[in-house]
Length: 306
Image (cartoon, rainbow, N blue to C red):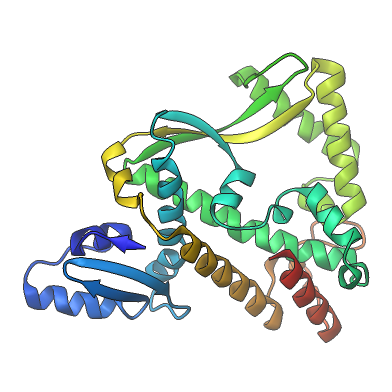
């Protein structure tokens, strides 16, 4: 990714701009502890972000500065329309992440066509999937909030409702109806949390089949898609991201996420494993013990999913 000058580099990684030659040189040395740079004249080429971070801010930058660059690169080519909608699955694609992580039909197809995954316990595959979703969704939400803070965009989470004749953005009343339908179906199935069904493929499919059935039977909605409604506020800044090396950044981000989940598996420290009873699907707080065989199966799932 190419950055115009030192000031723009600081804006990208949320660092204070230093004044004076010696202060800037010292600051660049600090930045290079976690970002690999190549300086060409006044420009900087960001080649890599290192795994080792020196502070919480550096850890946040490790993901957010790259996801920010990818989203603004995409938004640059949407600038003909200041307002548009984008789904999570589309953002996954912009970040270079496979749709199998987000789309359940893709996951089912992958499992059905992969011998190694067929031999892996399904709940372990779903545990890895949940960790990936959790990590990526935190990156997405953190990046969007960061862009709001910088006054580059405003956004809201909403839905697009499809019928046989047309589609439209959900009204406030329709958003309330959708939330109530989801909660009611969950309660009817006897569960308190969506996590309770997500680790069980058949349970997860049943939940969405019943939710979609209510949409269609009661309201004539053939499909309801979760989306972000984006408003672009500063078109001038977008031009800085026109020529970023999106392919390289996607590869780096994907590797960072994969390494993070891999370490969680090796350290037996996956958060959701301590929150969900794998037999009943209920939330609990007893630590789930990952055996070596479980860890190996989870690494296979991670490799296949990402």
